[in-house]
Length: 281
Image (cartoon, rainbow, N blue to C red; front, side, top):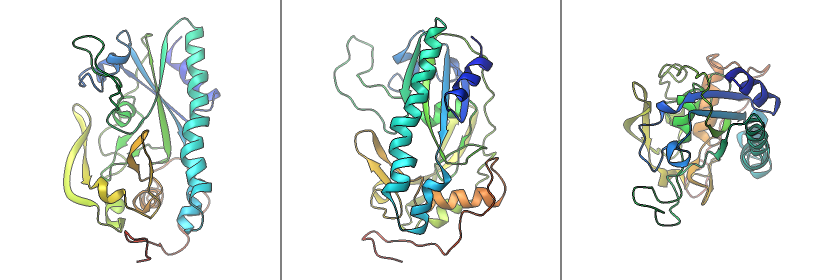
């Protein structure tokens, strides 16, 4: 089993994106976020992605259909069915080659402690990986200024899963910082609730970090412009289909930054925006 075989098989199972990181790129993380806390023998981190359909954003862009388009095909079905099937099938294939693989969803929160540590020195269950950092370490993209994980193929339109394996696979290079976003600020300027504070912090692998703008998650949680929260699994606000996320897509497509291209522009009409109570601005 080698990296080329893993990527080929993953794409046969439906993956649009596949990247591989050596475990060393994530070994510095605290034990509550460290893949070695889950699989101490892991040598490689495989990150796979499936695209969020551009058409799943259409109902929210037009302001006429939220749950049936993005809520289903851009979020729940994509995460729970399509990506889960690809992850399961790839895990089965790796284990058929005689190597163990640990499949992990990209749960977007800081952990859900459900018990006490089983032995001294171990973190309390549950350990969750920082999926954006894993995807960056696997060479799939970067965290842009607005906090979205961006790939050269789809921008912010994908969801990821991670597999830890005890096979040492050839790793992909990390994408240079700020090579996609280029700090264009389109998402920040588009926020109707002014959730971005103006301060920034750094995200990425050591030595290859990008500036990321701070935003008030409590404000985002009140957003009625396409933001989503699924409590328990996604404690953070999913902003992919909101005003900021759709503006990011428009900006990246307009400057030709993405390889997934379309015959027609995404934005066809003036932009609608709601304030916190849900009134049109």
